[in-house]
Every structure is written in structure tokens, then in C-alpha cells.
Length: 224
Image 1 (tube, rainbow, N blue to C red):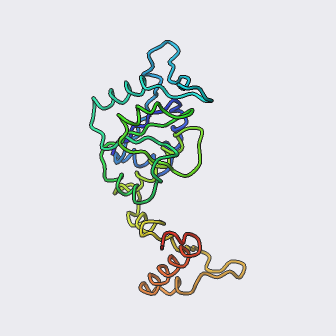
Image 2: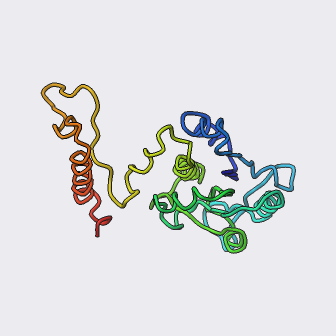
């Protein structure tokens, strides 16, 4: 899988993809993440990528010319299965969306900034808009990193234990059950006996019941 991310400040994204699972995924050749500086496609000596909004109002708007030039240049080199715009008013990101995106080959992500992008970008270039929550960030970079991380970790071979992702929260519309590790007792706080029993069927049943209980308590809307 290849993910290209267009940003006004690509430096913000260098760290998330240079460590841990994201770094190993790229070292294994299972994923590629390329950061594209939108200012490289600006047409003036100041590398301007924003301007005032028609009609007035506070805040600047990302210009269509550099975005169009950037996307068209990238599309001339490869086909993109999705061109995603990170936006607070996009569809809410979910594990189901991450699962679908993980099966794609090439993804292009545009990070918003300022008051957003010229609407014509969304109308003519974007195939999908995604939000990571009902709040506003300073830019789309952190949101793009969240989406990329959630997608890349699902690619077969990225995680050392490929079954790990299958037991994550939301994979079956349930939150993950409680987990424990050594020691079996700490300050009188004990690990549930069933987890120490070695009885696989009982452990599976306990975990499923705990997942249902936790989901009802914390995210009842998932069950409904």
C-alpha cells in the first residue's frame, strides 16, 4: 500500500511514521508513506497557497491552483483508489472504514488548513471526505496520521501477531474486554480466575461477555 499525504507543513508528519509499527511496516516493504509539500506547487516566488475568502470573513482559504497542480501531477504517475480530504464535516472515521481502506493499493490524502480549501477542490478532485471527530484541529495533519495508522496496521504482516487486530475494539462493534498480565495478584487485586484456568472455551466466553458488558456501559449506541 502507498499513502501520499499533501500538506502545507509536512514536517508535522515526519515523527508519526518514523517510529514503532509505522516504521517497521515501511521497512518490511508493506507500506509506503510519502509526504508532499503543497508549497512546491505554488506559482509565485512566495510559494503562496492561501488567499482571502470571496465575500469576506475571517480566516484564509487554501487556493485551488496549487492543489489542482499537485493532485494532477501525482495522478499522472499512478492511479489512486481514493483521494481523501480530511475535514471536520466529513464522514465519521470508523474501524469499518479503516478495514475497507486497508484493502486498497494507493491512497492520496489532502490535509486542510486555515478555513479549509476552495470548494471547487472538493467538488472536482476529492472522492471521499473523512472526519476523526466533531472538533476542529489546527490542520488535517494529525487527522491524516490517525487514519494512516489505523489503516496500515491492518495490512497483513504489519503486526507480529496478525490476529491481534481482529480482537481490537470496534472490529465486531464491541469494545475490547479487560486485559491483564503478570503478576496475577498485586496489592490484593487479583486477575479473574477464569483467565488463569487455561480453559480456552471458558476464557473466550468470559471475554465475549465482558466485551458486551463494557460496550453497554460505555458505548450503548454500538449495540443498539
